[in-house]
Each structure stands twice: as structure tokens, then as C-alpha cells.
Length: 333
Image 1 (cartoon, one colour):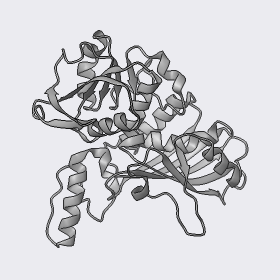
Image 2 (cartoon, rainbow, N blue to C red; image 1 turned 45 degrees about the vertical axis):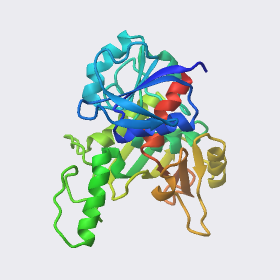
Image 3 (cartoon, rainbow, N blue to C red; image 1 turned 180 degrees about the horizontal axis):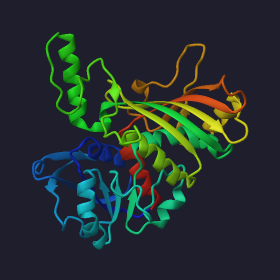
Image 4 (cartoon, rainbow, N blue to C red; image 1 turned 90 degrees about the vertical axis):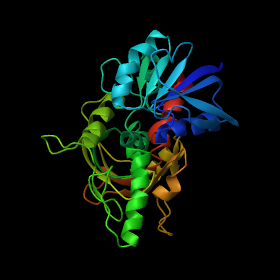
């Protein structure tokens, strides 16, 4: 692959910093690198391949001469800068929700629908973290045994809400341990030793925005509007790495437990952690910092014999759920 001139927008955020880590670990060929953020963050320095690179304030001219822009600066910023990026002949890979469901914009998980990336018109969308982690566990089975229905409950880490939420979780936990009052700022409720419904707006149908993202994005990625999806998204007091409990119903018959393990073993980006004797299954603490999604608790559903499986998955929200997936898209290009 020829070396690319790369720009990172939102470089000082949680995902922006992970972009740097992933580019290094994947040995992505970088000819030059510009780090962009808000005026407040300009002047900071971030380390990349042994060099301290200054962060610049993002402007409409920041993308001239660039081949690739990795965006994690929020939906409003992505929409504002889309034209500047594409007019400069640069490809935007966007981590926000701004373009995910827009007609004509590819929504890509490289292990699942890599061909979609080739159909871009200057912008490729990175799916929501909970959607990515779920589909990394569902798709290896779906491509052999068509999935008919998914019931999923998520256990989502603070990292999904950024560095501020991660720091608030630490401080809230300290407050509980020290028996002192704590007033949450980033989250709607106290986070230490607590869990609550995902902190996104609840619609008229009773489902929050995070849950509806999982429904709509899954159907777009798999190009199948017939799949029924019932999600419940919960914030749990974990710093990073989401976990999900998934009930999968199949159109005809379900794979056996051994077949499912074999299908996962053959699929890139997934590692089976399924040790019944030791009661050892996927955990956020073991998924944190890992590129692979961990899949386990593979078992036939007792209520639908021969038709459904239950599984449990854990994946690093900042990596496969965000930065890693985006850089893998860049590799496809």
C-alpha cells in the first residue's frame, strides 16, 4: 500500500487517541500526519512513532493535500466539514452518527461487508460500537445459517460516552467508597456501583436512540430489512469494552454448539472464550485493549430447541467499536 497523507479530526478525544495507537500497531503506511481538534485543544502534543506531533485547530483548509481523514469529532462537526474534506479530494471515514443511515453512504464493518467501502462518494461511515460488536458475534453464524431474529441486551462501558464519562465513573466510584455525596455531570445518574438505561433520548416507541441504531444499522450493513431485532441498551460501571448477551433465532435450523464454535474459529476478528469447566467466558476486563471480539457462553436456547442459540460477546468499544474498525476501513481503500 502506498503511504497516505492522514488527518485525524478530534485527535485529543478518547477515540482520536486510539487512532494513533491503531495506526502504529497495524503499521499503517503514513506519509504525513496532521492532528486536528478544537481551539481549546490546539497546542497539545501527541506522540506517534516516537515523535511529538502538535495538535492544530481545525479549519476549512486543514484537509488540503490529505488522502484520508479519520473523524471522531461529533456529528455536528462531521456535517460542517464534510464538504471541505471531499472538495480537497480526501476520503472521510466518520465515527459519528452523522452519515450512517444516509442513502448512498457506505456503512462498513470490514470483516462483514468490505465490498460496500468501494461504493463511497467521499464519505464512509463507521457503525455504532454496539452494532459492530453485536454483528461480529452474529455474522459468522448468519452467513451459513440465516438469522431471523435477534434479542440483545447490552452492558455498555463509560468509554462510549468519552473521556469525561470515564473520569466521572472513577470519581463517582471514589465517592461511594469514601461515603461522600457526588453530583453527576456527564451522566444523568450516579455511575459508581450503579447501572441505568443508556443515556440517549427515548423515542415515542419506548426505545432509546442507541437501541434504534442497532436495529437500523444492522439492517443496512446486512442489506436485509427482514431481520427482527429487539435491543435493550444499559450503561454499566465498566471503563471500556462493551458486553452483550445475544439470543439468535434462525430462519430454519440453528447450528450446533460445536458448529458455532468452528464458525467463530474460522472468522477473523473473533476469539472464542468458552470454558465451561472453569466458568470462564468473555469479560470486559479481558477484552479491553484487544483487537478481537471475545465470544462465548455458546449454548442452545432451551425455549426454542434446534432453532436458536444464546451467546455472550465482549469487545473493546474504543478499538473494534470505533478506532480499529475505522483504520481497517482505511486499509480496504
